[in-house]
Image 1: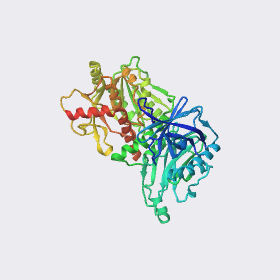
Image 2: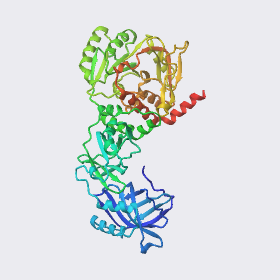
Image 3: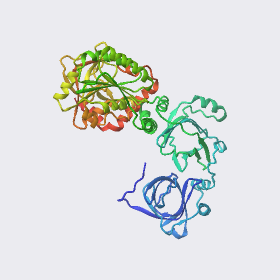
Image 4: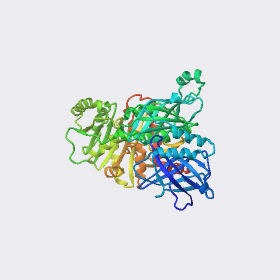
Length: 590
């Protein structure tokens, strides 16, 4: 976390006598004095580096020594600051101690000397310092070798093992890592990942632990290592530099350094997201920890890279489109395309001629099959419609947003492909309700299972303790019989399986948030965005349709799909937690 200057705070004083940057140890080396009120500590200190037009926070290792010229008001210090050099001139330093902060002046009198001269002078100053772990660590830092392109972990006095099974580039410059780490004799003080001039501490407290019995089986007899949860997954931000070699640097408590080269990270995309999400089964507090530090930032970065620039869309027109459009129905297709045939059979008898149908194919492997099926449907049902295709799989939100771009109606109805009308006048009821009450921003329908029980009559929100106590969408009265006599009711949110808005409003809200990967929670998100504008969500109970829940997505998709739902839930919390808490409290109060 960045350490900012507090203009109202009082700072102790100090001065930098000489300064250099060492590419070999990737650190600034400074020597000078600091005021007597500085509290010495074995912990690394936070340091703010102030350049002529930028600031940077880093960790510093400080060793004090007596200096006759400043003994009445300070101590001499040698300081190593772990930070890349950057392109700008270093103008000042601020040290943050346990109880006070100190400005260390860098002036025209500060010598900016060569690395070799600085190392010689620092060695001399450290010779005057009392023996300590920090003194020993700094002396070893001065003598350590730079990374020469090969692994040296096995040269450490006691073995430390680090292996990476897979690394994904998370654009623009993050890396997701999965592998294992074994430190049988607890030698490792710090693990860093370096690439070019960049360096990031790999926080072992933040990574996700994974069971690796195979590692224990290999190491137990020779080292006594028995920690089965030595597998890890972690995310390292701001590290990748194109064309540069990435490598780990393992520093022991004694100051020795070992290196481990990282193979070039793989490109991301949907396969990377699926592979990352297939590895975990997190619950309770571990869920928030894992998503906050690893899965959330990694998948978010991969998703931005996956979506990239907008796709080139091909519009296929089947039949003569209506001249005037009152409502545009947008239906994404993925996996199962046969539902389009069943829907068109229903819509041919139930939709007015001024309602346009837009199917958005989000599965490029099925472009030819959809073309053939669409031609057959037009010949049989004679209901005009359009099909939008593109050459990648984007997910639910982008597919609907593409359809929204092409919509010509005053209203837009987002509809799943596994929705089929029970009540022929379902859309007319919804359009009449929306037109009669401008305070309604988003309108849903009564969705039923095949046995006529409720699948959806609006959504509420509730805490789920097993899942980090996050707030999830809930379908009240799911599986019960529909209530008699209901017409229109206000609800906190409605499902995107059947959702009606004014087209102008849908576009003003930005459509569905494409940061939700593939599908889940973007419908509730859109409802909350409408509510933030003072608009209500409601359900028209007269508009009754059957919903073959989640069958439009095809067959079993593996454990990664549940973790993807959890990722989308995590994103939902990041964006809306205070609002959601208020809604939950209101529901409890009722």
